Length: 248
Image (cartoon, rainbow, N blue to C red; front, top):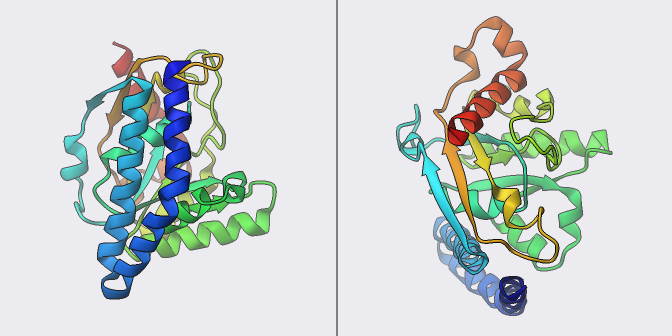
């Protein structure tokens, strides 16, 4: 309960002074847009690192070198991961060195201040109940990648509550049209134990060692014809195998 109190207190402070950060970013952007983008991203990464610390999260990372050894080191990527917890984002975002937006559920767009910060780091909002709006979001994501902004998706569509973390929900093939249209690299990431921090608790935050496996990037154009047609299933199998490896 104490950890949760400090996290809530910290978030309260963030929402209070966050507008100052937005103002600073606005001033920087007048002179240098690229520097402003870095400011926004580093600010968010700092917030997430503090939340991880206050929550007692320790992170064990496998394959971190795969970010640097990708086929196109500095190019935009489609980041794909399983989704167990809110902490997937809070933990995972701290590793990225390039501009990365997240395709998030549309409900987050309704939260003041948070929605502004999400837009500043190129996040997009997806309403799966509205097909027309969903297509517009995918088109915006494609434009972001073409402008060298990586996009992070959770193709399961929602948080997976299966007790066995190896039992992934079906990966929605439509999400991968971003990579198909741009031929950008796909970077698979697997999370293990993130739901032990909060979702499995009752009004508590449990100190947890979270495991993250960053896989090797690949291009859809390099896959077999069968895998090109089922790239969601292909990526799902990669992530499932990474989860199995982490469990070992």
